[in-house]
Amino acid sequence: MQATITIGSKRVLRGGALIALTAVAALASSCTNSRLVGVWRDPQFESRPLRSVLVVSQRKDPAERRLWEDAVTARLAQSGVDAVASYTLFPDDAPGKEKLADALHDHNLSAALMMKPLFATNETRWVPGWGSIEPREYYNPWTGRGLVIYDRRWHPGYRVFDRTLREQVTLWAGDDGARMVWAGTVEVDNPSSRDALRRDIADGVVPGLKEAGLL
Image (cartoon, rainbow, N blue to C red; front, side, top):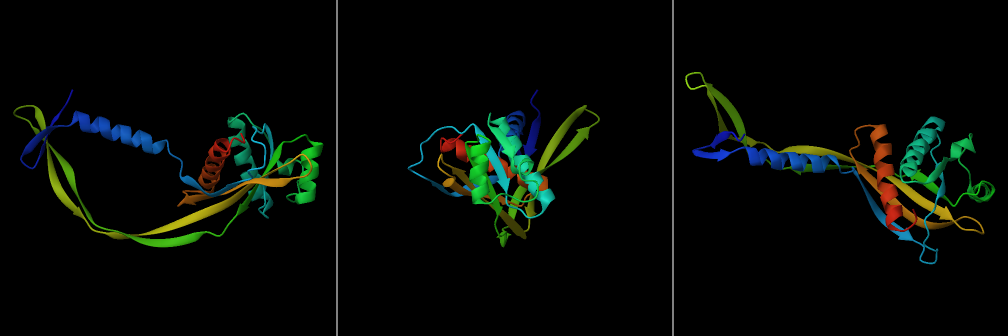
């Protein structure tokens, strides 16, 4: 049932607006907080889906390395890829290029996905003030009906501090030794936590690989 509301001296129906707002909220919640930029792909590399991938994080901290590899491995597995975290094969340190090529050959893996953190950047921006209409609900005990009045309100401007974190991601493949066949940078603005950052980075990488025909 639609409720009657009043904006200033105008009366409007509220039901349609609530449906529209709900649809917008649902769309916003389905979006990832990441973007893929600076993408490069080797034009000479044969475009074929890679079904087995070694995931390598080049972070020095052993715990962080494992968390990052697990996050991306899980995301690749959701897309039907047989993903292997490199720490299961190289528990002490991430493999170098020679060990990487040997691992791909010895374990029959199609490619290796390398991840390296880049420097974060900070930016300050100004959000200008804006006006809005705020609801106030009244109940008339004599009629048993409610009435919503909308008043105008001014919101002053404010400064926003944005922090952007970046992850360089490269894909290495090749039958005669690993070579880079794809590269990109995933950017995430203001992640809410380290877990959210890892999830957003993974969500940014996988669609890019699919678009390139590599997954």
